[in-house]
Image 1 (cartoon, one colour):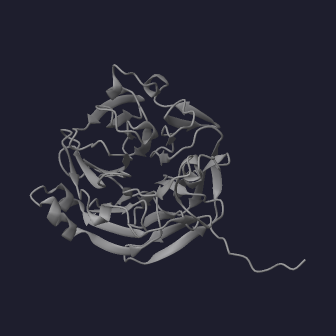
Image 2 (cartoon, rainbow, N blue to C red):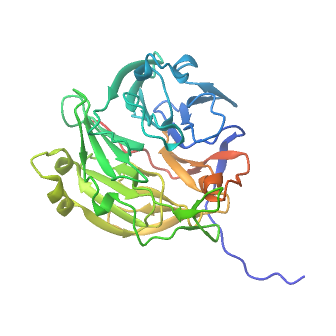
Image 3 (cartoon, one colour):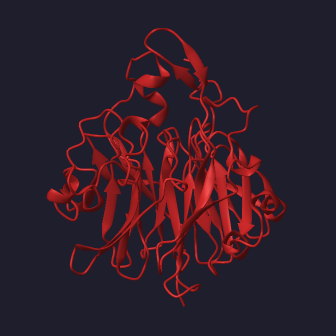
Length: 364
């Protein structure tokens, strides 16, 4: 039988965990090697929205009670978590969209929660005003820098599908939060971008046969090792941008002028998650090409993995073991993109590949 030339795949991956239940989105590895994942409520049977991988099992984290929505105390219960981030100094940060099935965020439910990894208890909860978390807001991912301010700052992407995208800046000392680059081109979907995954155009395809373009605002986010530069990208775009974190925090710069502080890095491929290592390299998925890119500090981009198993690389994390961890969840095969037919095939995967680099530090 004649064998014709085929596409070349490369990059050495190994599976860390296989998910046979709900679809995961977020992953983070703590400084001690503990692995946490999250499951937003997008229609799957989500029994707990935050979990720790313990051996070959998933354990609700910090406990099952916190993962059960308490209508009388929504600030202390997880509603629908999109992202989890270990900060390298003993805290797991949980970003709760409070927007199951992409609904309007439940008032008072959208929050950033700090969990003490030594005691496995909630130590701080930051909720947001209605001028920060809008009815259209979808809190997506978060990065930290504890070298500025009295308690550090957090930077959160709003990846709205129908409203303005933005970077939400949070002063962790007092919880004061404000929107930056609100509706700017750099945080907005690219109106000319037509995503193509597994050879097919990706768009919203409803049960009734109606269709609409797939549009999501700022999503991927990464911070430089010195905390001075924030990288970000809209989900439906192939472009990479960055901005000085000092400019983001400086409210004397009007938001309409902040766009002049944005740096354009070029086309890196369409990405969901991003992460930075201690050398300042940015890692970004390319969900159109089943690939992972590495962007060097000098702007040179290279593909470090291209593998048919990378079916929608979602969130990245770098562990103390110098591995790059990535959630692969077939997001593009969800029913909402295929006239109500769910094309996902279990298991979803947590994969890792050796990069011989440590994660970017968040503190001195």
